[in-house]
Image 1: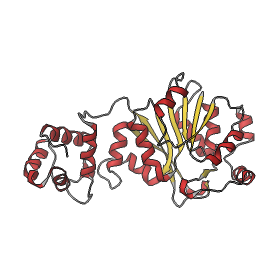
Image 2: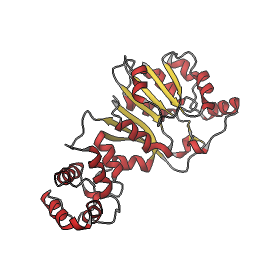
Image 3: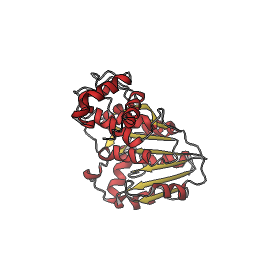
Image 4: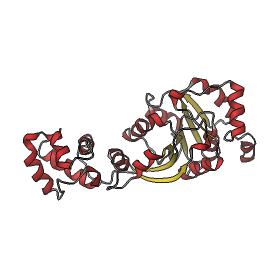
Length: 298
């Protein structure tokens, strides 16, 4: 399909979206967080941020009625879209008719074997990016699955709740910075692409969204011996945000080790009176290495 043909039946307009909903008698399921984007400019920004070309593949999660899928089909050589709602499968089949390089998979991305899917669908591409408008209620589980499974990804470009995007991109020292910031930045370099007002969706959500680009790192920016332990330290450090590092980590190692732990933190050149939200990834890694050396696994 040429760019001109695509524009002629563009899904992402208020009129066309309403026509499709009416034609198929589609009703929105609140439980699936379904909000269809009706703004062309936002779609262009999402696809441009992914850096796609005909040698590359795109994985979309939650294509809805195919507004973003159409743009991915025009930009990428291979597109796979995973849709959990079986009522949308025939609609997508009609909207994407003739696009031989696009495959729609009916399933729950959290339950699918993504490594196998990548082997089957993206064996012949030079790189793969995840590009999606993610439902708010499963944003974090989906992103952490993509990252923890070490899938061969170049970028993850997703539209998510604005506050969550800000937390992912936050630097140490602010109230947005937390365990999610550390986890995302361990695997990726985040960049906010744009803010998306709630008015450009049908139906309109209650909050604004943001597009964030996560450039997947070839290797983490810090040296960590045991990733699971590192993330346990991070979680423990943010367990109660108003408490100091010493108080939060006492719960992790046990009260009987508090004094020894305090000295260990000082040995790491970290003030025990600081709060978790002030620590960099490198400082969390230092604590993790020191606790492992002391035999404290939590």
